Every structure is written in structure tokens, then in C-alpha cells.
Amino acid sequence: MDKFVIEGPRTLSGSLTVGGSKNTALPLMAAAVLAEGTTRVTNVPDLRDVHTLSKVIRVTGPDVTVRPDEHAIEINASTVDEPVAPYELVKKMRASFYMLGALVGRCGRARVSLPGGCAWGPRPVDLHIEGMKQFGAEIELDEGYVVAKATGGRLSGGTFRMEPSSVGATVNLLLGAVTARGGSKIENAAMEPDVVAFGEALKKMGAQIDGLGTRTIEIQGVDALTPIEVRNTPDRIEMGTFMILAAMAGEPGEPFEINNGNHEHLGQAFKDYFRGTGAETKYTDEGAVVTPPETVTPVSIRTETYPGFPTDLQAQWTVMLATADGEATVTDTIYDDRFKHVPELQRLGIDVTVDGNAATVRGGQPIKGAQVMSTDLRASVSLVMAGIVASGRTDVLRIYHLDRGYENLATKLRSAGANIERQQYDEFAEPERKA
Ligand code: UD1
Image (cartoon, rainbow, N blue to C red):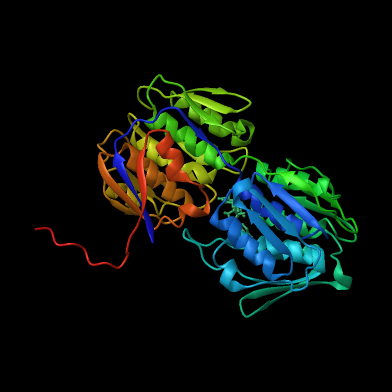
């Protein structure tokens, strides 16, 4: 396995560049399955999740060519003749469940494995399944698989209200509804920029969709979609991660650039909270320029659906609070128990405690290097950020989680002044005896 070895503390300077969005690339890839012919997506990050979904799509028939050097992916979906997404692949990544909508939309039937557990508690797919039923699919569960069939090979369409609002269920229902025989309505739909960009791409392919970016999306089914070339959006979570890192580890008073980001996708709540930290921020067409404060002002946050503060940035915010002058709380209203990183942060000397769905951080304690374990994607990057400001050596183990969502992270961070290296290690090696 691989780990990061980080020597700190280091002050970062210069710039960091944001890659293409993982959470937009995945639905764009699923959309390609709907259209006969080759769809090309550019600005696709070279990430493990993208490779996993490529494999899932290949199983169903299409040719998928990943071009990491060009950050492009080509999906030739002329043939989709095996509408199955196997457990072996779906268990690696929940977004593989998008194949349910994509395959029902294209073939009128699908056999897709249930995703199973997740590092931070139950993440159900009941809304995906219930919505598909409301849109006319017959659904059975068979040996861990969801088996869906649309009478006559196409969904009929219908109305579905989701509670809570779900990114994944909105994507899946859009995938199914765009080729339905009739019209569909999704109420309390996700408004996340990832969903909007994906919906815009579907429209470019010929889908008829109204209300993207609002809570009510209406779809009028069409007979078929056509393949397109589409540019993926920048990763808003990577942009937010880099902004938080700049505020906590940058040179106070020295502007730090975040390039290739789209600040409009951050959402107003993040921007407002971020301003409260004392980091001066100028948003530009290129991204953002963050001038770190002398000391971060502690700001409590609550995660909400877009345009609220993203749950995918709460672990990073927690680490920034450890460098702040005072106490603040991070409350996650999307996931109740997304705090597996907290015991790891405690190993670094960070004074943080969890009560229910909230973590309280008392900043200003010395942060000292230690061995810590990645538990999930965003938690892992928070450990790396802590390692950069910690004194001494931090080993972040099991970084395969991180490879799911951050491309070339060590190289990027080194270019901004971090002392971070990727090393292989044996997880089961006996500890060395200290003389
Ligand atoms: C997506 C993102 C993930 C992010 C999350 C919330 C992708 C690939 N992943 O995940 O990074 O953390 O949005 O912004 O885009 N829910 C149900 N039943 C369902 C589906 C969801 O109760 O059938 C609940 C979930 O438990 C959660 C809430 O709805 O409390 C939102 O989850 P959802 O938006 O579906 O997250 P994902 O699409 O899985």
C-alpha cells in the first residue's frame, strides 16, 4: 500500500491548480451510455473512481478509452447489450449505481448491484429505487441486485418527490426519465452544480429538461439522445480544499492563487463562512486569490445541500479550526456520523470532540506529527492538511482513499512548498524495536 510522509510545519506559497470535477465527470460518463455513438468528455481528472466507472461501463458493452494525458475520455456506446453492473465493481464506488438510470434509459432494463456499506454509516438508495418505480419501472431485489424493467422498453414517466434532496437519486432519475415515453417531474431535486452541469450536457444531447438548478425539474422524454463532446466543470470541492489550506498554511498577508476553479460553484454559504475566518479573498475568472490572515478566526459551520456549505468540505474545515484562535463547531446535517477522521486528528494533538452530528474544535493547541489512518476520501485530505502544519513527521496511511478524488496531490502540494512524499509500505509489517 501507499502512504504519504509529510514533514512539517511548512508555510505554503504560490499557487495550486484545480482539476476537473469528479462528481460531475461520473454522471457525464453515465450519460454517454444513453446515446448511440461516441461521446467525448474533456477536463476529466485521472482518478481511481473514473477508472472504476469506465470498467463498469465496459462490462455493459461500450468501448471506453481513457486518455489520462489529455484528461479526456471517449465512450463509444454504439452497443449496450449486457445491462448489468456487477457487485465486484459497484462495491468499490457508490456512483456506479448511476448505471441503474443509464441502463434503464438506454435498454429499458438493468441489473445493478446494491452498493453496500460505506465508511461513514448507512447511505441508502431507497430514493433511487422508489423514484424509478414512480417513473414506471418494475423493480425486484434479487441476490443483492436491483433488477429493473420498463414495460415496452421505456419508462412511462411520472412524478417523484424526494425527501431528503439527493444528488445521486436526482442523477439516476434524470438518466431514466430523459428517454421515457411521457413527461416526468422531480420535486425537491438536488441543485448542486454537478447536477446542473450534467443536466446541461443531457440537454446538449437532445434531452428536454426544465428547471435545472431549482428544486423542481421537469423532463419531457425523447426517443433517443445523440452523442456530444463536452467539457467537464472544475472540481468545486478541490477548489474549496485548496482555499482552506491556503488560509491555514499560507504565508499571512501574501496572496495565494487557486487556479482553474469556478468560484460560483462554491455556493454562497462557503464564501460567507470563509470570509469570517479573516482570509481576504478575491474571486476571479480563473478561480480565487486568498490572502491568509495572521491567525484564523474560528467560524462554526453547518453543512447543508447546495447552496449551503458542502459536507465534502467539513473535514478540511475541522482541521483549519485547529489552527484558529478559539473554539468553533462543525455540524453535519447531511450525514450524522461523518467524523471518522476525528480520532485520527486527536492523534496529532488536535483538541476535538464529537457530540452527535457535531465536532467541536478548540484551536491553538500544538499539532504534532504522528501516524494516522485515512478512513475516507475527504477525511484523508484533512489528515494531509494537518500533516503540513504539524511539527515533525506525519505518516498518512491507506491513501488509496485519497486517490479516488485528488489527482497528483503530492506533486501539487510540493509545488506550493509542502514537504510530502508518497511511499510504499507493508501494512502488516512488525513494528521495529527501538533500541
Ligand atoms: C453525493 C456526492 C458526495 C457528497 C454527497 C452530498 C457524488 C458521486 N457524491 O453523494 O461526494 O458527499 O452527494 O453532497 O456526487 N439519501 C437517502 N436515500 C437515498 C439517497 C440519499 O436517504 O436513496 C440521503 C443520504 O443518506 C444523505 C442525503 O440523502 O443523508 C444526501 O445524499 P446524496 O445527495 O444522495 O449523496 P450521494 O449522491 O450519495
